[in-house]
Image 1 (spheres, rainbow, N blue to C red):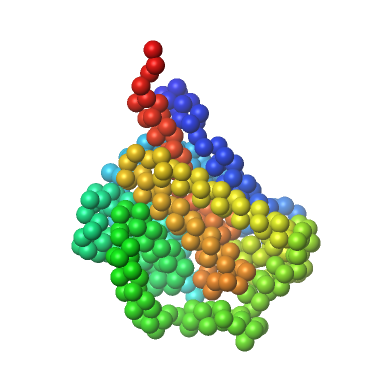
Image 2: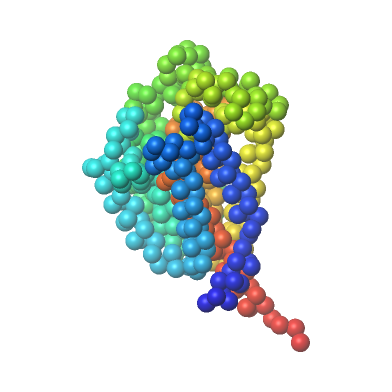
Length: 381
């Protein structure tokens, strides 16, 4: 067993771990920088309420789970996929009934001093369920019945999440599904038809949105129409990023973040702090880290010998790409505000642990496939 674990760690993609670790570490530094009071690093009077301390706990737990999952043969998860899916639906029902209402949204299940956001862990569980279904029906992707059933799998949790309301996460679900069915063999003709159908549904989505969600989309085109109201965060984020110029004002020297003009600066708009305090080059460093992580995740899809492993890696990469792209986009003003955090960086345990779990399964795919290749490689005599 020890030898097997040693071989697994030898086959780890340590560059991926380093890149993810850098994002998490920089996130902790930025969270402390934007939330620490006069007490210093931690609010020792109430550690469990301190954002930095909590993020460190989440990171330690997340990396522990990451390394634990990496030791499990990823193919085991295929047999548990439907249990995962039913667990997701059960959690979404629980949050609808017993969830805590915060800022007009009911997304969290209170667990003592901590909170669980089912829609975050749902990204992982849903991708595993979809990967299992699409792998089982890989030869039938030309049939609309297969495509329809796969969409049925994703639309139920997407609707339940949308009604919380959480438009951003529901869009992550649907985007991941779209990329996964395309990777599974969906034709471009089928994709065009599906895209047309989704466009037809847009008016229905608009009519069912909350008022603040419609305001966010409307103000995306001109936030200056309500700079002190619904457009406040976007306006301040643009000011913060613009004031950072090339090299930034320096850690802890940003006026928008330190004087608290920039709200929710430790969650949705944490990249604005990056732009202000680390400048254009600091922002590009973050961007490069995300691109590198995505490429390493897609490498797992490339080396996987199983359809399930390939689609799992593609689904995880799609979820990370969409969430990072939307968050970075809304910070710089090219995407509407949807309220989804920046992966690995924003404050929040459910998001951080979920994405670290994804990396753990990616590592399992890479390590086990490499070990399998070594075992099946013909020996030279």
